[in-house]
Image (cartoon, rainbow, N blue to C red; front, side, top):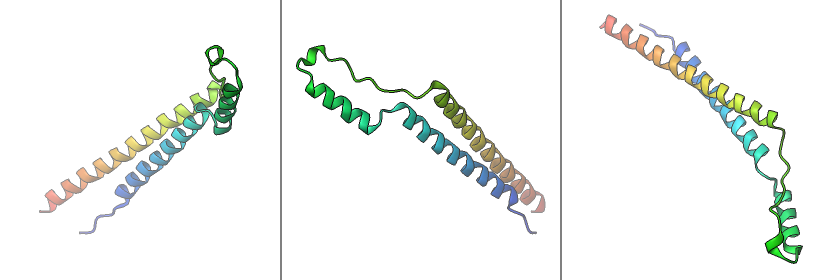
Length: 105
């Protein structure tokens, strides 16, 4: 008896695609919310040049528009759902294969 692995392959592809989407979204979120190295260096230089550190304000960082972060969060959730769907396909294929082996035996 020959069993096709196409369902298992499809499930694995879904999990991998979801993981790639999660990785990309997480990278985008980090890039959008963390200050850039140049901004940090500039803020440190400004703070060092101030005569009285007690009166210095914390460095102001430019924030990305919240819609960009929201879009990345949506992508993150889509990646999670995609990976979960792929895992469910793998689980179902495993159950079907187990049933076929039980029937055949």
